[in-house]
Length: 327
Image 1 (cartoon, rainbow, N blue to C red):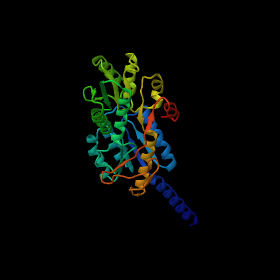
Image 2: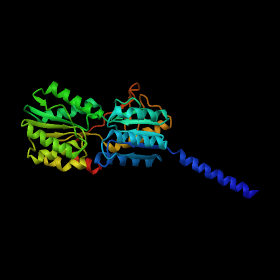
Image 3: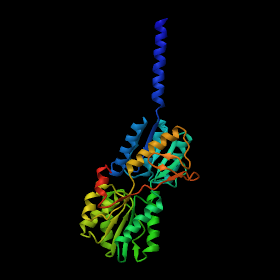
């Protein structure tokens, strides 16, 4: 009888342990594209914060910036039954149906760089779209004394936040520097170094008065900078935008890249995990809530947006320190 009692107790303990293991929060964060420095840093942040909180979190980076690949990755996470899905969208409209499916299945959905998404619990930003776009426009203006023309890059024509930054930058330039005209509208190449470079080479050849590139997308400044260097236009054509300091530090010091602004993608990765765990635990996000990585927030509850100001300036004085932090 004692033996039987012991077996029952051991079985109960085993079941309890299994239940505890299953109860660990699980989440998957789907980013725009894998294998580039920006999202490598985000993945580091996700892993670090997950280890601190005891959360099972993974980042999924598609092989290309194709919205269909993001949809498939989210479908896979729904099938796995994760507690939280995070996403950095390439195309908001393409993701809405699958994100609705996730929420209908009881999965918490968090986005970053997706201020227009409807089927999310919360979207968070480390910079306002208007402020980010205008900061880069002002930098272009400051570095360009005479009139001429400039080009605008975005990751693709469907990346919501990149296009919001571009809208803000273009509007600021039109109002404050009408002597510097935009070339075309905008070019959706800034998630690919080679596409950014080849487009820049074409634009430089076709526009003798080209004075700058506003490249929104972490590979855009790098590719445009390479083209400027090849055409020996360093100092004549300004190149600015968000990029990985580790990837662009040499180009900053050589003057090929003018600089730009960014936030810490590793910090954004940490916020995905932190916010996801807070929501799983039933914490309410409201005015005055302190979210590690974001600080004390004043959320737009109706729009489900959390927007903070955590901009970092990239220039010759800051780039080495930022790069040495692994960014």
